Image 1: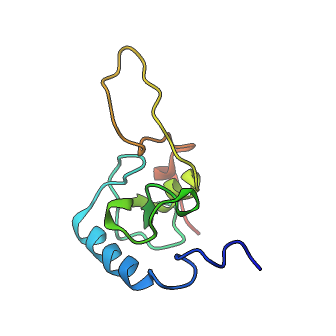
Image 2: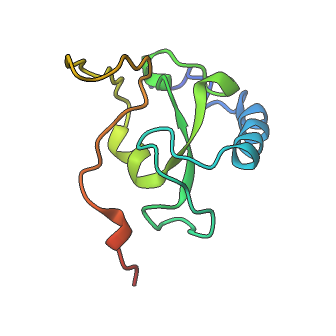
Length: 116
């Protein structure tokens, strides 16, 4: 028996709620919750800057699969880089306090990406 068999995101019980909340997020959010840059809805998958939905607390780490408070808008490449990790910003003395797991660096400049 697969260990993923009992996960609610894979047995379909949360699919309808997830799709409904995805539409709400696409209609109300315009900035990537991971990198903080604007999301261009004219890009379509598989473009790295295409919009997608990110689970703030990954399902694999106990996050809810369809709760709107656990979902945020993201670039596909940012979400892919984040994967199932939880991030906590390391505080330096000069930086103000930020209480968010959404701050991640980008590995490369995707604005220069040219699709085929």
